Image 1 (tube, rainbow, N blue to C red):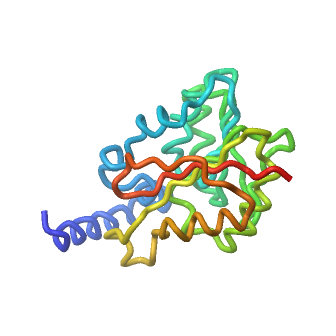
Image 2 (image 1 turned 180 degrees about the vertical axis):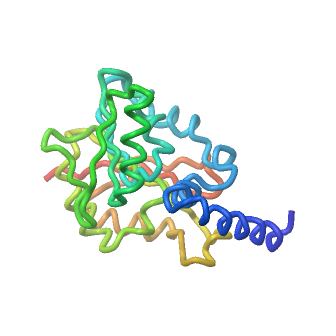
Length: 209
């Protein structure tokens, strides 16, 4: 389908969703159209080799697209912190976790400059399609590094080029810019996966003090 008709259909759908309620519209924005096809969540989870019992922060968890998948990966003995600054979406994730008996999900209403994770720390900070929203990213992740346990990883997945919804503002970040900002924040690129055509998939480790 040509790009313009596809974008127009998506725009019509967004207007329709607007009448269904704010939370529904936000969920659609976070989950996207046919997201499973291009996001490949199962392949992402497998690539990260998550261990049973791991503690993971889903930074910018939105409607929980990855939160519940990560919770399944860490198992009952692990923990996933659904971190977001949006109260409505955080409430949605909390209600769904309660309804579906996910006892290993904790919802955290974060600050714009701090994910507010527990002092005990996490084994992974996982962020997908959120990086481009953050202000002062170098300072943000330099501060967030205090929550990473020894050997912990920072995973950043973000769009690598313009998307149809960029009519509402830029929603992508050049890969070289992410790497440069993370280097300044005190991280080293550990691995770069190429399994997501639309997105960068970068794994960083925290530099020793």
